[in-house]
Image (spheres, rainbow, N blue to C red):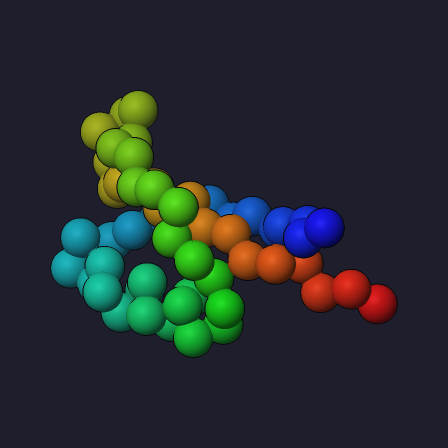
Length: 53
């Protein structure tokens, strides 16, 4: 069974593609993007399979 690890990343509007590309190169998959509750930068939720020891 696959287990996952998760990350929450603020997305800067002027660098969204670069941020997501960087995380994608490290094996992270974008799950969703949600607006900030405070009106700030949107948040990206990412996941990737957890490495087993």
